[in-house]
Length: 628
Ligand code: ADP
Image 1 (cartoon, protein in one colour):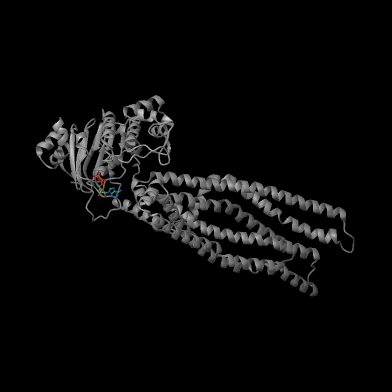
Image 2 (cartoon, helix red, strand yellow; image 1 turned 90 degrees about the horizontal axis):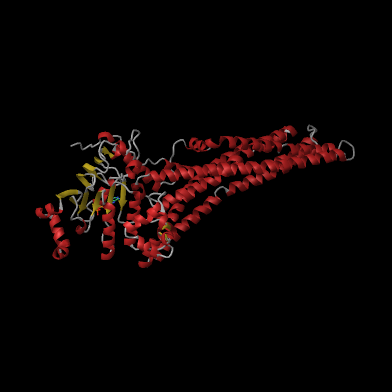
């Protein structure tokens, strides 16, 4: 009576599951989610590329430092070479100085190219890692996550958000470093030339930094909203412009409605993008005007200093000073832009990390064993007092499965029948842990499935569901999904057994025909038979079969049924049956209603019981019984 039903799987408290739901819910609603220690985590992404980053930093420092030299050369050009004290220009010295200047520019340019290459490599490698990590992590999420979250929203995080940080990463790294070094080097050069002019030139800087922070915050908020709206757009596109979506819209004449939905979200997107582009523009404009006006002010100040006779200022010094000072403008503006970008990208990083932090509901226990190490025989399935609610269901709602217990011995054929919505497919999905039970346990090979390595469990289970999913790929590739190393002969053998080989060879490109969403259209029955062939190739000891309801005509049904008989032979089979004719020979039939087993037994036993099954059977089997 262990309602807690935890046993060895006690490490799966309900609280953990609720945590995931909340996280997923936040993922759907959030604009700029809270993520702890965001900066540290972003920095850690760069750790594997330390070496390259170090080299990059070195290059940046060198080239920025070199930038100070030309202005100092300018001072010498003016004071020593062009206008030496009381004499004519010294052409020899002038030539050397000019040559040196050009060399410096060349060197700096070369270093710049190298540095751009290094940073764009590191930036893209980091984003690439992030994209793969996110993809792999999302794959580990339980099925429930994907039923709760729209495909388009997930795609958007992978594409738009990761893409968004990519551009920031590639530019930020060098921009910060290069600009900081340039600013410092320029300041040093300016102080060397004249400290008084320097003080006046930099007096504005602290104010700019303060304003910049505020603009950054506004921008980050808009960025979060923009990405959210972008993911909505992607989701609408993905849902509406797919084959099924278009078909639905066309058949209900809903194109105008869908377009309106798209247009409205698009308007939001435009508004946000413009706001994003415009926020801070006024600020930048003021910065530029101020910075550009500084030289004019410098001239004024220099004149005053010279008149006051306290200067020792030469024409060369003033030209050199204004040259350096002008060089300060771009790096300063650049730094502020970067600071804004960094703030903006934090919103994107937060969205990415939030997904990376989702905890998959189905994870291997640290001491998980393989099926081979389990105590019982392979193929043995046992449900022990299983109660189940879907993860997002209210705790007060009636359970989908209510204290279901039964066992399937190896090699047995057990069938589940009952009204639609009674929970039959749900039972199947608990065996390979597409979901975990709420209470009670599911055992495979004598072990709680939560104590088994998930991949090892899945290897033992073949599933044929009502809806067959085929990739947009050739038939052969779809089949080899089950076993990549399968030979052509094995493919043909499986397809022949599944009654589909003759259909495939009849199509123009045979096994190389592309099927799936935009490929050759197979009928429902043909798809099912390909799915059966796929399971035959996998060759698992257990078969979970969710019979297609009524989609098939009698001929295809016969073909599919023969294929199923073929694949079920010698395997433990748990079938959700809709046509009772297919299960009269089953070893055990459980009748499910409202999540409970209400009758169990062989066909004959259930007929003798004269209950619900007998009633169903007399309706369905009436005709064959006469012929039989
Ligand atoms: P059956 O196979 O007997 O027709 P199912 O097991 O498919 O029944 O469904 C049982 C109940 O669980 C139904 O009421 C259905 O609405 C609900 N259900 C099925 N899948 C989900 C899901 N992913 N999330 C929430 N509820 C679900």
